[in-house]
Amino acid sequence: MKVAPSLLSCNFMKLEDEINAIEDAGADYLHFDVMDGMFVPNLSFAFPILQQIRAHTNMTIDTHLMVQKPERYIQSFADAGSDIITVHVEATEHIHRALQLIRDTGKKVGITLNPGTPIEVLIPVLHMVDLVLVMTVNPGFGGQSFIQECLSKIEFLNEYRDEHQLSYEIEVDGGVNNVSAQYCIDSGADVLVAGSYFFKHDDYSIPVRVLKGE
Image 1 (tube, rainbow, N blue to C red):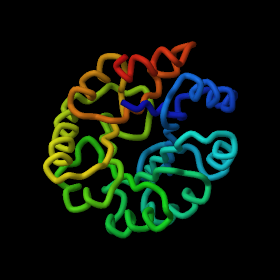
Image 2 (cartoon, rainbow, N blue to C red):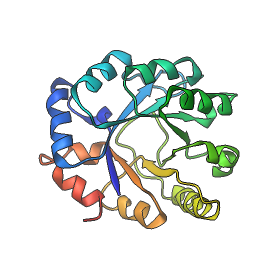
Image 3 (tube, one colour):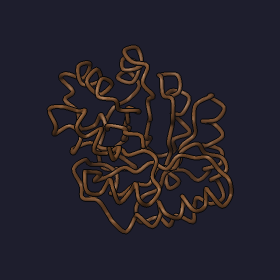
């Protein structure tokens, strides 16, 4: 099990210290949320912050683009230092093109969908991706409650992966804590994104161990 703390919930005034502490605690990815105020009703990080983070750490940066027409920004986020770039199936009319653009940058390809979107819409492109992000809250704000009905999507992706001999990681984001994490693990998740739950601890090694099921 991998753990990906969401920087959206960290102390921005101490970002360098936060990243050092996350790395020392044994987390696997840095989850970097990008919001444009259109696809979701909020704004967040962009290229300059990502560039500074990349210059400071060798951790895997897992960039989640919650933006309309993500094709416009894929190259820029690749250049800024992303290792994984994830786009929403709802955010573009040309999802195959968007995924191929990510692949062309040499970065790992991720795809995601909102809680209300049926998982079946991803079937035509699952062979193209390295990571599938299952949103277990409606994206745009931290601190929301886990939508338990989304567990069936994780189970579907796990079974589909085995049946078709694919190798994508299944990542879960939204309301992940010490209770919901176990539900996700049992359903077949590989990566857990945690924001509010993770950063409420003074010692980040505690949520890392809990979320890894140790």
